[in-house]
Length: 88
Image 1 (cartoon, rainbow, N blue to C red):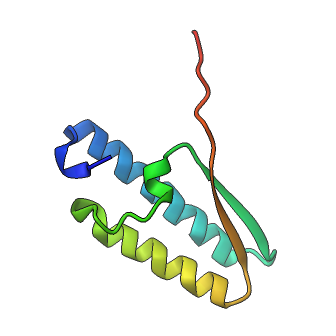
Image 2: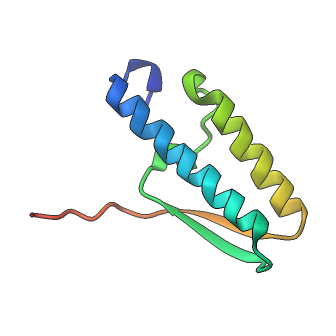
């Protein structure tokens, strides 16, 4: 997925999914537990996103927070979860 060529709506969705990962890391920071899994239905958000110029600030924050948390002894797994297909 190349963010530069996506519609504005897809960019907003992508950024929202990145923001959700960032919020999950904030929750992990406050927890005493040591082992965590973050599930996301966005492969793009879980992969190396360094090429996404529009979202680079948020990606850098996620990488920084993830690094700080794992260096402090927390184990965090990022896991892709295939979206459910509903027929409603």
